[in-house]
Amino acid sequence: MANGYVAVPPDSTGKRVATTPISLVPYTNGTSGLLPGLTITGATSGATGTVSSITKDASGTSGEIYIKNLSAAIVQGEQLQINNVNVATAAGPSIDLHMQVVNIGDAKNPDLTARISGTGAIKTISDNYAIQYDSYGAANSIGRT
Image (spheres, rainbow, N blue to C red):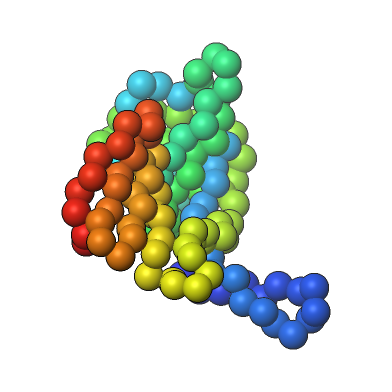
């Protein structure tokens, strides 16, 4: 999967929406070793990728893993490993997704934007300064970038 665009109706003229590829793998038997940022490997398929994020159910042992740059398809039932240690079992095959890229900006001045970091912090950029809000809402003026 490559970064790109998806053509979207409603007017059927092929308007493009920016997307970024990611793979979703449902899992069971998750352990505390399943963490974002680490390389995950399918023990049967040999597929590798980087864990982007994880959702968990109430038990904390099942959910979905979002994986960036997955090299091949994960197969249902295979062990998922980090550093050769089993951290989960694939409850289904990997599903390739295209997540819409969202840019928050001023329609009259596209240089005025807001960006969201991997930790959920939001950074707003104006003509003279930038303000970063952490994922808890605390603000920090960081100057123009």
